[in-house]
Length: 364
Image (cartoon, rainbow, N blue to C red):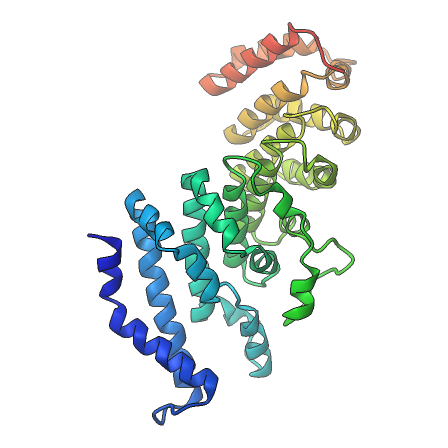
């Protein structure tokens, strides 16, 4: 069914909600409804509409195309569904436990909007222009600091997807959003000494207490390093955070895989961060994971990242140092031994990739 026709089914309710919201904001007649009821009707109406839009867009590509063509992304901005900081103030003023934030209709609507936007970004780079034109990155920055795990996780996933196809949004990740905090400052970031940009927020999310937030933050960081070296000077600060996640055997397998892949992406476009990676003993760590880790995903990504690192002389030298005092022999021999021990086709493929690169001249 046509996207517009499906939305028409919601038209009567949507018009009622919009009229009620306009009257509420202007102080006009409210038909004897009390304030909590008004807020509930408005927020529930927005949630219903956003859920419908999200399901349609996620269901078929044609609905995604129609949604963007009908300025749906801009409407997300204009409807202010991503601006949920006011919920914090309300809960605080009412003395309500902050742990109930996740069940608030406005928060759930924001999550639906993030899922929709993330899907558009994942589908194709051709939707990037509409996302940028909607000017939502200030809201995205603040959502990274919102104290609800699912909001932060979906925000990190969205950032990863707007960096999935190209470096189109890289500059947006390091744009300062201090004006957003000052003008709409319903809450403060945890550490105002940090840079007030999205990349700094991602770094905080890499050490978040929630496993899904950490997983998607590592995914976003990896994509932020994939297409160009533009962000490398800032991304060097995330190396110890990624190392810490890799060393934690209790961490989610997917998160550790994302962390290993992100470290390899830090040399994908240049050797600018090779010294930093060697100083943090990343080549040794990746080789150790490839040989000894019990989880397949980190092993695969460690081997793939080693294939990126071994192009550069300083990293080859570091990998050569691993063999000192090691009865298993040289780095090359260890790779052959590992290839014989593993039955995983992907691991064997990545080992062959490393050996092929070792046979080529090294880069300084």
